[in-house]
Amino acid sequence: MRVIAGKARRLPLKTIPGNDTRPTTDRIKETLFNILQNDIYGIRFLDIFSGSGGIGIEALSRGASKAYFIENNRTAAECIRQNLKFTHLDADGVVLQSDVFSAFARLEGEEPFQIIFMDPPYGKDLEKNVLEYMSERQPSFVDENSLIITEASLDTDFSYAEELGFDILRIKEYKTNKHVFLKMHKKERL
Image 1 (cartoon, rainbow, N blue to C red):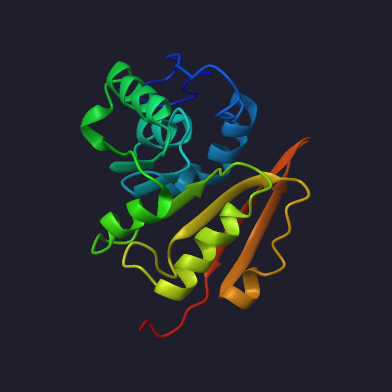
Image 2: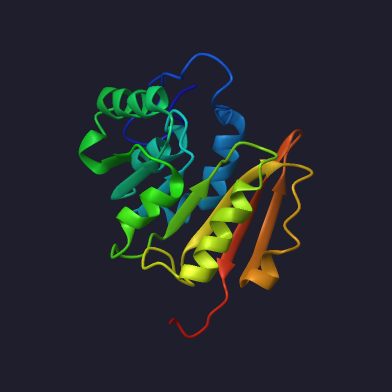
């Protein structure tokens, strides 16, 4: 795994051994960032279920002003810190080593992120849990302008998204997984 483009282009990234994380392949990462290329510069990026941090680091390399990484696994969180330091992007990266909902509590009061990416373990409905939290709590760090991208298995159902208050803007399918692009409906915030 490596950084595809930008300031840290071609630098290799460490991953943790074993099957605890499932790094996004370079080909899929490149396709994703080709879709996002005009929306990255100067933004705040949130990488949830970060693994080794490859997606958030790619965003920083391509010009995001700040990236936050949420990762519960201690070894993976340390791997993100090492990758940020190795790529010289550590000044703009914040690693929150905790479960996602504790991290969300710590982020309350922050300005909205322009892009929120999540790649949760498959088959556990964690993406639905995150979207339910955002819908019910309406935290400060997400609003109707935040693009939420979920990496999921091809058979993951998102039919509930509309009911939770999200529009599915696009679904990009690959051989074994997909990216689902969502935004919150515009509505009065509580």
